[in-house]
Image (cartoon, rainbow, N blue to C red; front, top):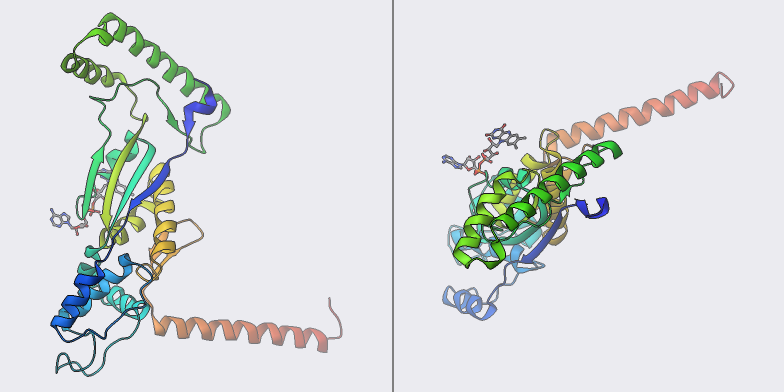
Length: 289
Ligand SMILES: Cc1cc2nc3c(=O)[nH]c(=O)nc-3n(C[C@H](O)[C@H](O)[C@H](O)COP(=O)(O)OP(=O)(O)OC[C@H]3O[C@@H](n4cnc5c(N)ncnc54)[C@H](O)[C@@H]3O)c2cc1C
């Protein structure tokens, strides 16, 4: 295997996302007298939390619930309020189906620690024969380090091939092949690249993305979740409108804080005034020294 093939970057695929059955939705809305209601949500992923949220208070319009005298209009404002008030449960109605390909077992071990709101299917190393030991292309890998990784992986690949021949694995029945494949994976490195399917709801994604893009998180999982965050904020901008990436590449939830915003505005004004003052003083002193 060439070095170019040995070192890979993870790939993030979104293979599924929610759909809405508009006929059934219309029937439900008619049942509660809200058949005139519609949403400007850009897709089903953003629409579902709005529907389930409004269902709770029957807030599809004024008058459906006598306690409700005004309703929040628009998917963007509705989801912003859901996020701000922490009603994450309605976000659990929207799931996204990911496949993370060419990710290491280092990555998958970390990913599966997140237990809540997820479904996981991992490529089996008991069924799938190990042919090559591809590795994550970490930016810390220097040219000499890559050569050493390459040598170590090449050595292990040769060992596996020799062991497979000694067990005559190709001519065994499937149940024996499986046992041998499982036995030989024990000498595979922890960094070997594989594939994992991961489904997560919006609530979980809002929890996991900040944790796994933190500067304290491992490089590979940071890289994957940076892409996950980019995709989620692009596809579902209203549900993730409060999630922002900082200069260190960390995605954090920033709840709107009017007091903080006003303070920041005042500081900016003072700075602007000061620079205006500095320029005026400069001029009065007669020069641009
Ligand atoms: C930067 C970083 C470094 C880490 N280093 C290590 C390490 O060195 N060693 C190690 O072992 N792990 C480590 N971890 C993994 C970490 O300890 C957690 O296992 C992982 O973050 C998943 O926890 P979670 O709170 O996100 O749980 P999730 O499963 O994602 O659950 C989400 C939330 O649901 C609630 N919840 C879930 N399950 C329960 C429950 N049974 N009871 C009550 N409430 C529940 C909690 O509020 C939880 O935060 C690290 C994680 C990060 C992000």
